[in-house]
Image (cartoon, rainbow, N blue to C red; front, side, top):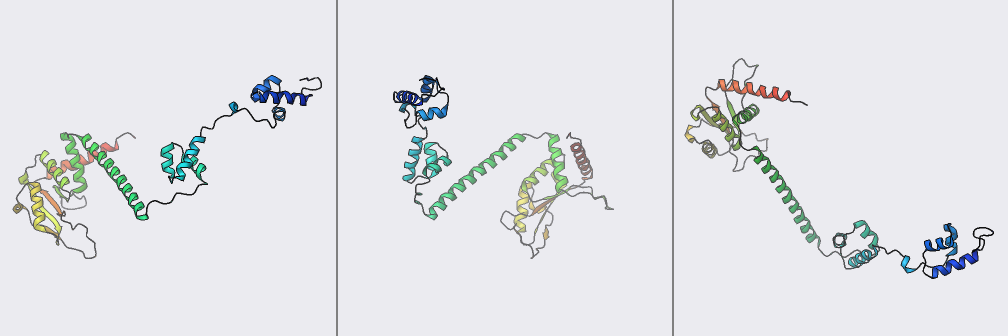
Amino acid sequence: MTHAHGKYADFEGLRKRAVALRRAGLSRRQIRDRLHVDNNDILNRLLEGEPPPDWTKRPNAKDDLRDKARELRRQGWTYDQIQVELGCSKSSISLWVRDLPRPERKRSTDEAAAIARRGWEEKLRIRDEERQQTKETARLAVGDLSERELFLAGVVLYWAEGAKDKAYSDQRRENLQFINSDPNVIRFYLAWLTSLGVERDRMRFRVSIHESADVVTAEAFWAGLVGVDRSTFQSSTLKKHNPRTNRRNTADAYHGCLVIYVLKSADLYRRMEGAWYGIVGGAARQPD
């Protein structure tokens, strides 16, 4: 090679040497360094028509996956199945097999619907387990209640559900009167009254229920829950049925509401109301 009249003046001689080196198995980089050709366009012209040696070809890591994906698709596999089998993305699978026919549906519409339904039912089951686990974790986190905690919780419950004195009324109604249909709420309220020193003989019980319901059965249910004889109950209050409303509380589990009235409870009522406003004030003083 001579560069007497320019770096690449003897182009044909340079090409012969480049072709010989290529056929001897040298790479482009090696030929460039040997011949001192640092211009890629010139190097391309020197090696034009000469294939690279096999050892310089980089293997395509996805060639095998592509071939396997196409073979599985021909066997009727879905994209999801191929993805699980080969561990590659659906987008790659779609690109590799898009020219192949879609596999025939192997399940009837009813079978596919049944599979989908079972899948949904399983998902619902898992969700329900998660909900129940959350509830159980929260229940266990409460633990035993201190006397103060029981008192404050009862105050909040009473203020939400119990009868209250009205400032605009000419007659004071400072007594504890509570009504609810939830047996657990009733149990808690009775525990609260007991913690305040209220004996059972100071309590009066009465059922409030729709006139179309089984009053005797309802009274027996509540009497058993509070632990007194049904004969001690006051006469039940029957609510007239409005034909324009669609009542849903008509199942066997419907027992109406239990009304609990505490005799000589004016002082307890005042303590409850005072504590409630103490709770309100305490909450307002919490830092933002």
